[in-house]
Image (tube, rainbow, N blue to C red; front, side):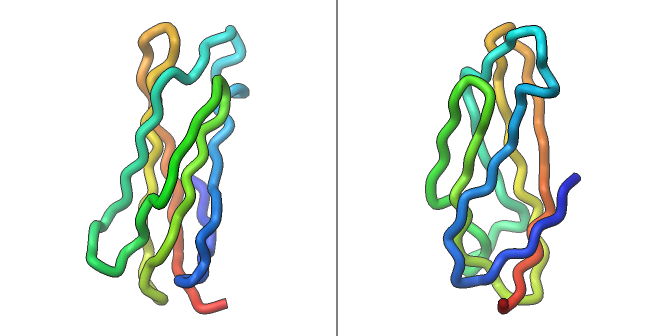
Length: 93
């Protein structure tokens, strides 16, 4: 699981590249993002997108000193479902 540092005032894109994990031509057909823990001032997924091999989420907010788990769940063209997560530590930068 990857770890990234984010400023609480930053609104920035994070991406997962699924192509290397599925070299046999499967494509991403659906993508959903979740954040834990959920809170009023926590990180939010402000926008999300995907193409055939990459998924992107624009993350905003978060409380300095807190750590969040951001998870991307995808459905592939052959019906398989997979997840990847990253840890996001929020710090004033």
